[in-house]
Image (cartoon, rainbow, N blue to C red; front, side, top):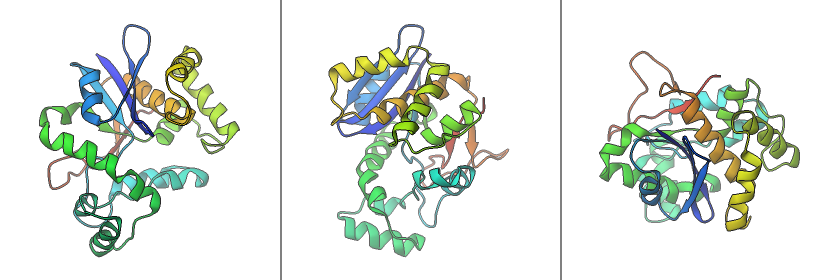
Length: 238
């Protein structure tokens, strides 16, 4: 089994793969490229909303935000409704989302909508991939794996160091791995926090042993959107 963490970056997507050999990585323009690179027998944890509500807001976003300390709560955005994701313009997307959910869309949410659409479009046309692609959230993963949440934001120098140290607990060669990524991709295309986020997602996929927990939890599984995709954020409690 190959365990892959995927994070959006300015070049597209950064994918980090963990398996029996040394960690590997790939920067792909599309999520389809990530899936092809990951290969068969791969489990992917992706920092992007997957199940899209038709109206209202997702319980997954609310519960993930509630579980984070105050300084990290803003890292969880409200997921746009499906019609907004496929709107022709930002203005139309805001209007649709306000109409169907009662909330407008932040610039951050609008900025990631092309990535949301990329993953959703792929899963709609590749139903065989749904069982192996999990939505996750790096800040949730850092805190749940380490048993403590970082005290600083990830763009802060101290915050970056905290996340590096947490990642190193589970991926001892992360320092050399980050150097390898940097030799091929400048900071302007792949930021340091992109690398650490993708790494912790890959570690989470590996550490959960095929049994991740979800927000929201429930014996019947998380709710699904109108196309059958689960509306959940997955993590591992170490």
